[in-house]
Image 1: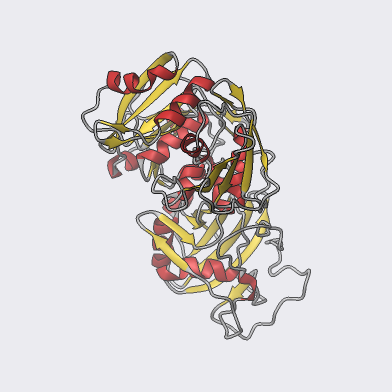
Image 2 (image 1 turned 60 degrees about the horizontal axis):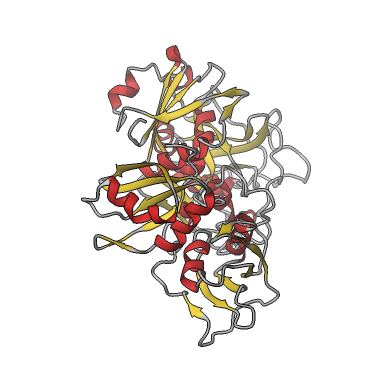
Length: 473
């Protein structure tokens, strides 16, 4: 098996597959910082922002066959750890449009979950130069925009800086090419078109297209119901003095562009573009009832280790009058929904768990209710969106991280093998940190190892364990 790398090697890339297609395939897992198309070999190299993103992508596509434009493509780690400028320039990456830059950009937005208006685009592109005109429209390729700068240099700088980045965190990815148009004709100033050099243009009447031949983008994208956090609706924002809602825009270094808003879109992107079947994202019930538990072996901490895979835990209570029943209160309704979805029917200590929503909205603080809200072991305090990528039903493979730097593979195996027969194992490094994969004979054994050994100490290091979606090592 090739050692993990930030660079992903993609094979069977036909001539019909464009850079944007590959970016759309990979972007749910992180930012692609460089891409090299090896057309003569039907291959491509994509460099991720970090190794964890590349590992996530390959873990996911080891269980799901990726297909682009009807063609199966195959992903593996590249032998390259980094792509250099020389790599890009020697592989014939330039297209006809790249060789003829002008001041008008053609922008295609992939994986568009939140609405995109002229003002949103203006906020994204204006830092690179004076934007004269913007026209948006809907085509077969998806939602597109033409953006005209005052100078060709500004357009070139914008394309170089923004290509492949996201407008919102985890979605609305920019695919930018140079247009072959010489001048944009804008007839109306509204959410779909704008001439920033002529603010006196009228507002378009409903149902009419802002520019003949470009089509009408309309308002086909809505913010999902139940989105939590700070959400912004941009159609009321005006550059010409009308009242507006607060818009927060920031660049997250080194390679992402994001708006601070609700998490649903980014979480959906983490699952490959949409929430898992059966997950609505609108659930507001946070308390789960787990039943048919092994009363001799299950305690609150073991339940915490398992349920915290899907979200932060507030508190857990095992019922005195029904000791095979436990209440688990999650921090958010979506997290409770994920836990109930992935753990229903899971085997734990010889018992098949039943996991359903409780009739109680929360667990009342009491001496017999264990508190976890402030626990440093909750997994979703930092990099929450990243952690959603690893949500899955129990698998035969566990992933161990935060391992001691001098640990040996046989020490890792010895730490967990009391819980079942270890079929295979692998110790490796990611960004100088030791990690390991351990494959058990079945899911019940790996689940037991996880609930018993997560957050235990191994050679003075508190280790972390989650399920891996890899099928084999």
